[in-house]
Amino acid sequence: MPLVPVLLLALAASPEADQHRLDAPLPPRPSALTSDTPTAARELGTPTTLFVNFDGVELGSCTPSNSKRNCHWYNTEKPFPPFSGTTQTKVSVLQAMRRDAADYGIRITGQRPPDSEDYTMVIYGGTEAEYGALGSAPPGDCLDQLPNQIAFAHVDGELNDWINGGATTALHEAAHSWGLDHIETEHAIMFPTGNNEPTAFLGECSRVVEDVALTPGEASCPDLNTELCGDPNAQQARATLEHLFGGPYVDVTPPTIELSEPHDGQYFQAPAEFEVVLDIRDDLHPQVYDAAFWLGDDPKPESKPFVEDHFSVTQLPIGTWEFHVEMVDEAGHSARLDFTIEVGEDPPPEPESEGGCAVGAGRARGVSGLGSLVVLLLGLVARRRRPR
Ligand SMILES: [Zn+2]
Image 1 (cartoon, rainbow, N blue to C red):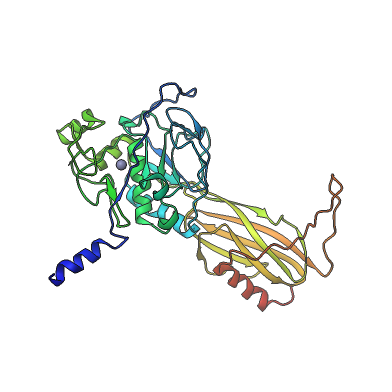
Image 2: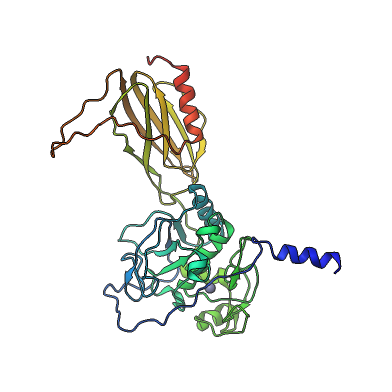
């Protein structure tokens, strides 16, 4: 065999480049189940929210599917566990999705929106092996007349470090729930197979296909296709998304930070070791924040990228310590949190709870999730052996 074809075969066989089927076949839609919460249809050209649920969920039964009620007409047999990938992977997948959808009114978040807001939910969980494809979605909703549907990205398991492939799958399935169909053009988000290579929504008209063999098919949205492409069975994804959701989503919301653990003013025995857990909220959470952590009257240090919601403090000596946290989101909006920790020689008092059993208020937490910021704090602590 000549050398070049062998090399090509080797490339084609690499797991990154392998083509994976995007959609699992769906069971027939049940007629017995009905939705008791009809929602208003989308007003064309108004923004939407896409909630990527990495947190795991158990779905009840309903049709059509409903993101606010966590119910669907399939995939209700067993719960979806939380996505096993890292926080950094989740943030990178969301960033890749936001880049692909940057020109349209699509807010992409990993934090569940309030009930007052309509949102598409992509459940990011389960594996390709379990579900038979990278994802699935309820198709055929031309013009997103059901704005609260649920789609699936099964990119957990051995694909749980995929970034481009995760973003492609989540957007591909969300777009099915908005009425977009498969097209015949490779490297486009709506191509029926995919891998971990980057893709984009196609800016030209492409033939709608009905299977992975690229057999020409009938479009869900023939009138819109005729309007945008002059052909009922040719789809232009970029123009379609702008038609549905309007222009770019603009972040004008500053983040908020609250202290989950420990509580403000909490007492620890020296040398104190504890984990600070933050409740960070933002319209585009999680993301890469620029964060600064410092103590007392020290000058604010240079900000560092921060994607977690916690950091560990170790070896904090006796004193009253004022902690300062500042986080700036990717749009430049900032939030600040200040709290105080008391460290003394004695063990913390054992308060009597209502049930009569003692709870240690100063229980030391395991030191986990150590980030680069801990080093910053430790540097400060080491430099200031004695609090002022
Ligand atoms: Zn598909």
